[in-house]
Amino acid sequence: MKKRGRGKEKVTKLIKFAERAKGLEIGDKIKLILFLTGVKPNGEIILKVDSKNLGEKFDFEKKLKEEQIIFSASKARSYEEIKKIKGNQVIWEIKGTYFIYDLFGSKKDKEVFNKYLSLLNKGKYNQGDLVGGKHYGYPLSCVKKFIKEKDENFLKKKYTYWNYYKKQQDLDRKFPFIFHRACSLKCKDSIRMNQKYSEALKKVSKKVYKEYLSRSKFKGGLIVGGISDVEIKGKSIWPKKEGYEYELIFKKPFRKHYFLVSFLSRKKYELGQVLKGEVALRYDYAKVRISRKKRKVIKELYHKRKLPLLGEVTVQTGTL
Ligand SMILES: [Zn+2]
Image 1 (cartoon, rainbow, N blue to C red):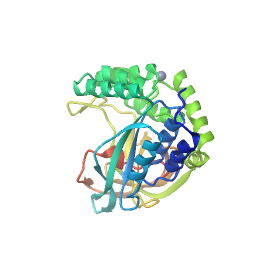
Image 2 (tube, rainbow, N blue to C red):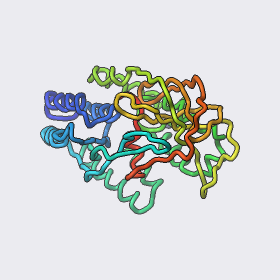
Image 3 (tube, rainbow, N blue to C red):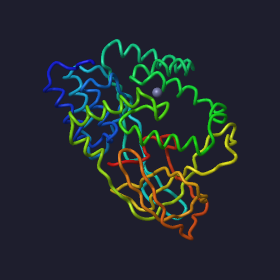
Image 4 (cartoon, protein in one colour):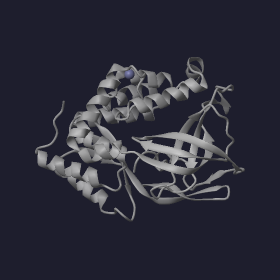
């Protein structure tokens, strides 16, 4: 294990930063802390900046430099969140900017990372994924599986719709502390890593650990906003489905945000269907229980967005 930094005191300063930073979501706080303690070799984290935390970017970079951590920062990009739901419109608005930071354990790691980027730029994705996976410390078994499962034809042969989405859900629940998709529920390396990361986090930052474990519950209206699928040329690879993975949108804000959560169900609902239920949030996933189906269906529900491509940053799941 690599030990980082010249003195514990400074690392502590950065850990304190991670604990209180408003611009870091919980997953990024965890990643940063695990990197700082040397458990995670390298890491990519996102820092959001809006009017409430304008100084955090400067503060973060200053502390990284003091600690002599090699890093690169992306240019500013904008992100959106749902502002309101009006009629059939889910209206998003730009909330602020975000920066992607790549943090490196050593100069050599930075070189490997650049190799990874150059492979991706050349379109050598599989080779790139192998290099990238190693860089981030992901188990080889999982990286190989990830590469295989990028192929829709492989997915079609290997899984039914239900089995595929059920597996993703089970993996998310079994391994809340890792940052890669485990190849299976039995993957020994992932089990070990999940355990190690969880213990390290608990030891170094009780605050973030507790926050991550805390539960919260939303009760109220939920709108069916979408159905997950895998397609080849616009056609589902699973024309027959034994269930559905829905994207549910909270009808009312919860902790000041409209959340989007996934929900796997055997039942068939229409897009725009309004449901009533409970969502229990813990770690970075949600458990949904539907109590009833309302008569209301919002016809032609659509997302009014300025930035259609930034889903990963705007989707709010988990505890905030
Ligand atoms: Zn694995």
